Amino acid sequence: MDLTGIDPEVAPSGPGCVECELSGGWWVHLRRCAQCGHVGCCDTSPMQHATKHHIESGHPVVQSFEPGEDWFWDYVLDAVISGPRLADPQHHPVAQDVPGPEDRMPPDWEKYLN
Image 1: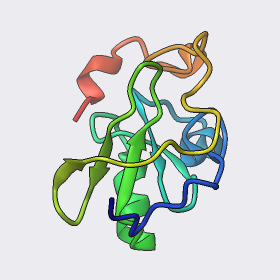
Image 2: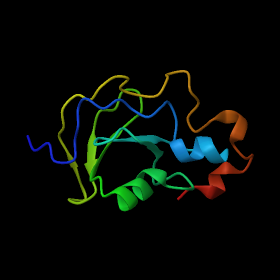
Image 3: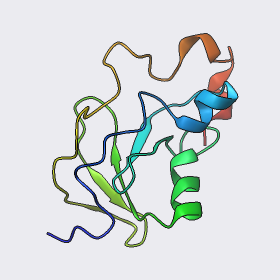
């Protein structure tokens, strides 16, 4: 297994998208950088912070940070890849709203999806 861009020992940065938490934004789903642990929002989310993190950092691989999902995405290969188990936690808290956080969701949130 090629571990380029993957550090299994690094914990996730937190339970939600780093940039959305700082700005008061919201997300649809979360992705975790497999190299540094940065948690960002998916490409369906309005701000697409996980992909922006890849572009700015050069870190090539993310893993889903959703309960019940363990797939990896390689931005360079533009493909799903296999990867090792990463440091816990494996996903955001199960009780956390999706999309969310609920208190930040605009009533017409669906029109902002990508």
